[in-house]
Length: 493
Image 1 (tube, rainbow, N blue to C red):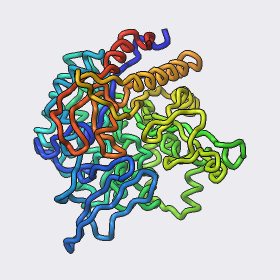
Image 2: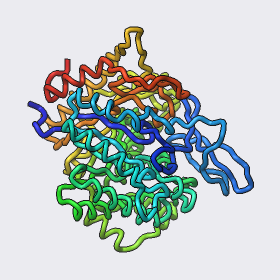
Image 3: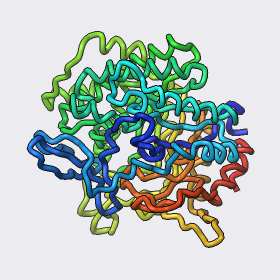
């Protein structure tokens, strides 16, 4: 048998895409609550207002510079649609949705807690009791079915008040605010939650600094400081978690992509190396416990000066993550020969295309070997337990007249990914804790703010403008994944 009996199967969600109830139960606003919808061709936007009353919306594009106009602060404005406000309404459907997860045989449910549901301003002295009670009900419902929660403490949900008052994670005051929040929830849910992740896709600080760190000015200096502050906060939370309950385990969460050179030109190999360094810097610190020399030299060249203390580095070294979890959906091709690639028809809006792989409507390549590559890369580098906590296929599913969704394309994708994961375990001996697909139930796409880009095993009747009954319908993949789980990954037909 490829996977041990301790291997965990499940699915993942994020509060800002799924939970809804944005103004219910005493919840405060967070970063994504002021982020509009978008599409594959139209970016999502952060809406803002200046002290003089001027308003506007600034596009947020992953991998591009982001900065609000001088004096502007994020705020809600009339005339815009904010999909996070309702998501797909887990807030009112949690019992139904967890029952669906139980019916599939989930061992684990990865979800995030809305920091501003617990502390509406992010640093309130006392917690919002209604917020605590909501997650109590969620965790109790999970326990009823023997489902273990895997809880992300911050999944792009920096409280808006911390952004407007302090400018987000560039300010060291957010370290204490995050530790205070973590202290409250880890004590309150002691015995109900054992597995924690601190920051979702922590390297989003570089790729989307507003989402990753609540930065309204995503300068290189602010990104570097924001990342450092999150590293320190994470180390403090690892220490805290172990003190609260020795059974607690705290993981890192990294956004991982495999990178391939387009040619055998050494310059293409160097480009791949440098892009991988930008990605793995985050796990070198948070899981490896130290700042790598290549990043320190980069900061030196770029004139980056960190607001730090000797104690910061002692904490990072002494309290690294207990395990490394990561998202991985696809691979990417890099080259210094753009003209050559373009002449060969291998360049699209999404970048250089891999001629050996097929891509979906959003330009993401389906790579059947990417998880084996990812798992070996991370295992060889850190030799700490790994957990695949996001992996899935976004597609415009169709609800048929008979209330069925025939998503064989998703089944084919997931089959290839599980085989790749299985090879990493059986052939290469990687220590793998589990697999939580993205996503358990349909939710709003993070990148585009759409509903039509669906990932779940359960279809939710909701469109890109928030219309629909929110009724749930199991897809064909629901029944297929149930069979996969019951066979512990042996039956993939």
